Image 1 (cartoon, rainbow, N blue to C red):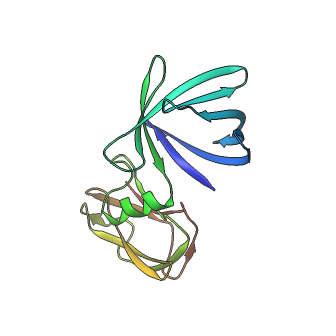
Image 2 (image 1 turned 120 degrees about the horizontal axis):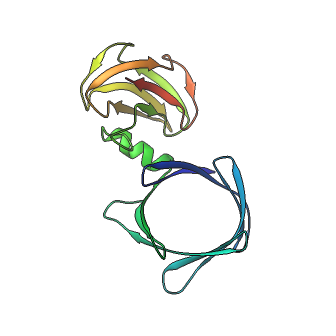
Length: 169
């Protein structure tokens, strides 16, 4: 299973390909890394990769799956964006980030209704599409005031997780 991780303003798709105790083969975007990962008693993570050693402390923020990562010289805002967090954020009327220009399906499902057309003006919080997944219908709302650019699906379509449904201009 892969997740999307937002580090400051960069998005990366991360997938653990293999794991044997603390030895992992991890795919980040299209590059594969062999790492040795240990969670130390002090609450930091020790990472060995390619002959280099990295120590990172992850401090949880006020919201679930959001952290501040501290290294020796820098710190980063980190957000883990998995199917659950994408689902919860889309249901609440906001995208993952105010800068996102699309609505993605948080998990596999079926398009029940598309409530807008390409070129329509939409208001923040306006329901634009309804999906059915896991025996439940969910409304997805526009993350901002704007204009619908492209609708990538039709009513009745079966969609995959993380598939773009609607793009905004």
